[in-house]
Image 1: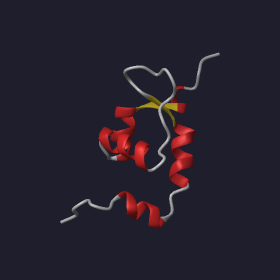
Image 2: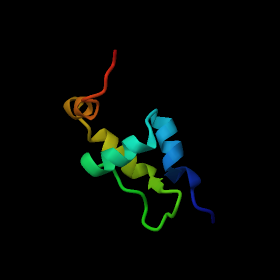
Image 3: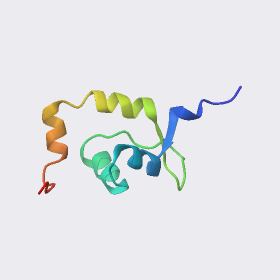
Image 4: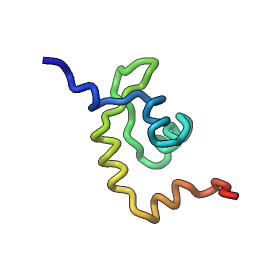
Length: 74
């Protein structure tokens, strides 16, 4: 029986999928409670997609706006 590969995602692929930089993921992890990568995932951090989806569902419109504070949209 093999592991379901779609349950996990690397940081680069996650950033590309979300349309953000890996530095945004690092900042969100530190400041916004974004899920941390799996322990001992090594040089290529791996994230549990279920944790990411749960975190995204928990963001209200107000919180989402706060994530983008300071971003110049001009």
